[in-house]
Image (cartoon, rainbow, N blue to C red; front, side, top):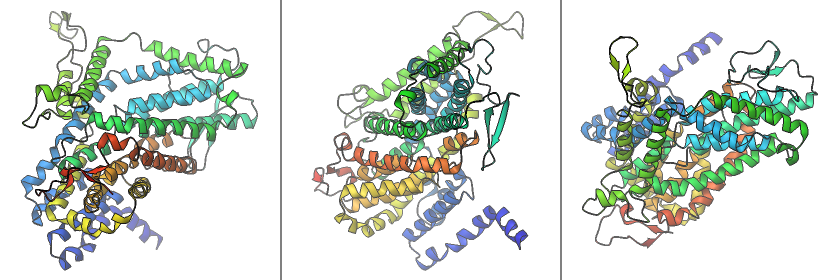
Length: 586
């Protein structure tokens, strides 16, 4: 019997892929309407996304097959959804992020900021959180975490193992963050989850002190993965759900006037990120460092000596990077140029360069944020990585060799997550199919009783629901599934669509409780020293804090930025003469 269950479990993916479509067949058979056909497709994709019976990107391709066969949309219409402006923005943003990673600029930024902030325990925690959050605003959360965790562990290793008065540069090991090879002087402690954590054999400190050091190591690990997730919400390209929102808004409401752009999103999400990061730091500090602020801020002889030792580790690693190369300087200039162009293209509170140089008949910018990202991305393939000169080719004596460009296609092809491009496209196709089939309108009619519920309560409930759902499901899949439904609900109760779509998008990044919830959590968990219970206990309150901060944001500074106090004309599906541009929201 046990062998039978083991066999079923081993083949669970095949069984789910085969039986789930059959199990759901009564829906389109008993209700032979386009709305039911679309619902069948969405439910099937949702179950495959939740169970991961198929790769997420493969499931995202289902609309190309199902929609034409069910008479929902033509294949040509469906395929267009897979390369919309939001996908282009995603690709362009990642081209710049890949260049930053390729030339190690992100490591230089991280080490420099840590040198400025210092390494006293509380400040060290804050420093790593600030650096990780800033980097994850521009490059992927996963890459940021993968870089910052080894640095954090190396600094902590030096902080805890260096005796008083011993100089790091004289006999101290591990100045270059080589954490993978354990020293023979270390003993290994094994935990319930089978992971190991090095403990210095030479340390004769009391058990209580070692336990205190171990807890600080746990807090440092968690602060990196949490701040990577938090930092990603600050920019439109910081994490994929933000782009899903922009794409869904543009797909469902084509006349929205580019309401969600880089500048408007940053104005709303950056303060949210900053407040959430501050509360996260206070919570992690109180949980893992305690309330002894004199000790937390390194006041005392031995604490100061150890802090100096850890500082020298960071200083040594920063020196090993050497002076900034021409490539790093060029990437820095292009990166700053990209951000400036994004902010000034069509900011809303003054006339941007897009409105002046490339206006359409309505005076809006014809160039999008994706246009800017791709423009800078193309330049990366054109600018040489060294100052141009007559350099001989070492492989072919007598010939000259040009320096390579800042970016090449081989590097891009290896590091670009093409599966996310397909996943984004599948979400846009799903939303368009819901609109074309009439499923969105049907859902909106069924949700009209919510008109009597206060909008702040709706936003709070949505945040709680999404924050719970995203712990066990991809945040991209979560936003892809929920945003069209919430848009229909907002139209039905005449509430500004962004009032419910923005909390949903931000809450999808509140995946703090489980190692499988998000790649940064998994990376930190794989380094050892953490149990699932440690992450769940810490992340639970952080989820509650996140929900409260998002609710505060949408009900305060979100109102003037997105004009949430009115039901916009672009959200009105009945484009009649009485255009309700300024009808107050409930």
